[in-house]
Image (cartoon, rainbow, N blue to C red):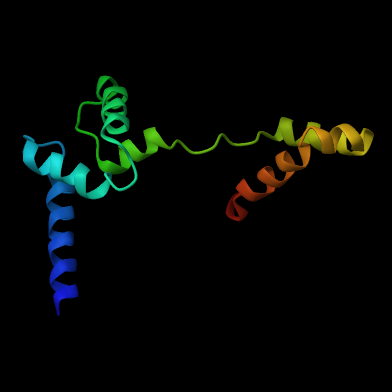
Amino acid sequence: MPEKALLAEELCFAAAVQTAYGQAPDIKILVESYARFLADNYTAEQVILAVRKFVPNHNRMPTPSDLVAIINPPAPKVTYAEYSHAIKLRDRDRLTFEREGWSQVINDYHNQKDPLND
């Protein structure tokens, strides 16, 4: 039973936090949300820097997921041109291909592809 109560408390808090954005902010809730959802993985300095990057470009408060996306941006996608270059290099100069890590480019390109869009 205590696990259900803890889960209910956490979900209620998350709902309050997520629905509070875009409204007059309750600073206590916002600070507590960052402490609850981000403090285990990110320093206060990282969160502050992410807030500073977010605010000039948006007219709402950042959600924790907005801040995580700023702190840990997704890896850049490998373009088809990079992939094609790696394939040509593999066929032409195997030593350079291996030494310079082009096999990773090919692997990354295949791993990022969305089967629904192929």
